[in-house]
Amino acid sequence: MVWIKIPLFTWVLNAFKYRDRMTIISDILKTLKNSKGGKRKTQIMQSANLNYTQMDKYLRYLLHYGFLELKENGKIEITNEGARFLLFLEAQKIPVVM
Image (cartoon, rainbow, N blue to C red; front, side):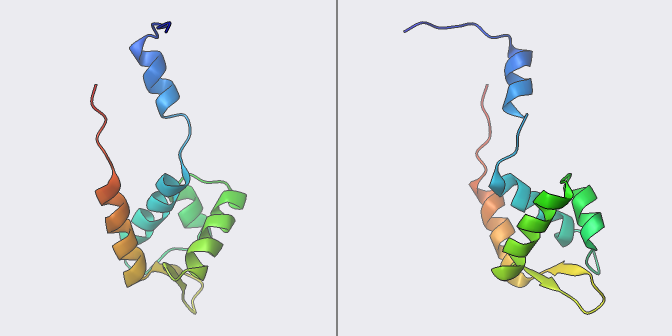
């Protein structure tokens, strides 16, 4: 087996280059949990650092499975089910040991 030495800063930059699906869902749910009366799509997109296509895909998914709720005023709020799922996701995070 051949070991290649990679500088630590290069490894750190590459480790955080992309977010996985669960991290994106977690970011969306955290954004909505921290808001009082819900948020509009544009606010969610900006807070979770997503483009429109990504935001639309994830919101449709989360609305379909009952983690989010669309209110009459056009704002989106997190449901109790979504808050429980967020707690589950946060409990699953494993700290990185260096």
